[in-house]
Image (tube, rainbow, N blue to C red; front, side):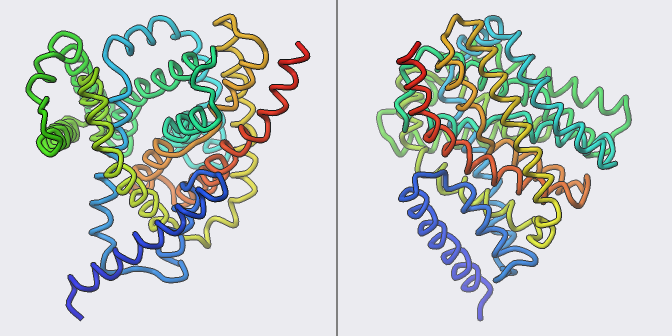
Amino acid sequence: MHETAVIFLEFGAVLLGLGVLGALALRAGISPIPLYLIAGLAFGTGGVLPLATSEEFISVGAELGVVLLLLTLGLEYNADELVTSLTGNARAGIVDLVLNAAPGAICALLLGWGPVAAVAMAGVTYATSSGITAKVLSDLGWIGNRETPTVLSLLVFEDLTMAVYLPVLTAMLAGLSLVSGAISVGIALLTVSVVLVVALRFGRFIEAFVSSPNSEVLLLKVVGLALLVAGLAQQLQVSAAVGAFLVGIALSGQLAHDAQALLAPLRDLFAAVFFVFFGFQTDPRKILPVAGLAALLALVSMVTKLLTGAYAARRAGIARAGQARAGIALIPRGEFNIVIAGLAVGAGAHPDLGALAAAYVLILAAFGPLAAKLVQPLIEAVAKRA
């Protein structure tokens, strides 16, 4: 059979399967991310039905999915909000970083995986899934609650931390010397700073260039600009995903809202492909041996996120019920965690890192939204008594 025909058959089967899994997740009221990861495990190396021909094609789609995920996340904020978030919630953000990066780093060091894998695992356990958390807040009607701005500010702080963290991790994974690594990180930080300054000072000119009354033209301009900046960022040792995130920040107001609406279907399509591709890279036979460790790490992470949310909400003068909701909203892991693990696995950090990260994300991506639904009645009962 012609190779192109095989790619179409395999890719079409993957997308159709993802559609069925997404429908099942909607019916069950859970995030589809765990099901997408399971599908990737089934279609990848060591799976039930491994795909051979279309893997490279799906790899490109996965990278595009990361760019679109971070672009749409950036569209939710503007540069002024980011600066305000940094200055107003820096202390809570640092507590979040210390409490939630430590479990992953300590775990990797205790396992003897080395410092590079420890830095990668620190990122895996640190970052909350913005996408899943936003959906939880929306589905449960928590958007208008007093603690929600605190939760969102922590998510913004995490995203900005990732803008610094990813260049550091990339340099370490590339095995650069101390001097070369420092130069690489310096270039990355300079790039991020320049883009933020441009977004703050000249955002209106970027918006004027991108803006169009025609949805087709707007979509082409936004995606084209995001891919260009992502490519330049990659060349300058900054993650392509961070470059796309900063493009989203540069756009605001009605333009950002319109772009989000246009990008949402594309983002969801390629984000699903990304999660499947991560599953491709993980041999399911390696997950069972680390399942117990992943469950323990997930349990520790739940506790540290609950403490983080409670601390941040208490500083904002929010009552105990709101503190509990803030902590629960921060539990899910997803996009960034898989991105980090994917980078580490691709660079050969440690053969078991991908399996541990996949099992860890599976647990928290599924349990996070479920915990919020189960605990909400209890929180409401406590709040009424108080």
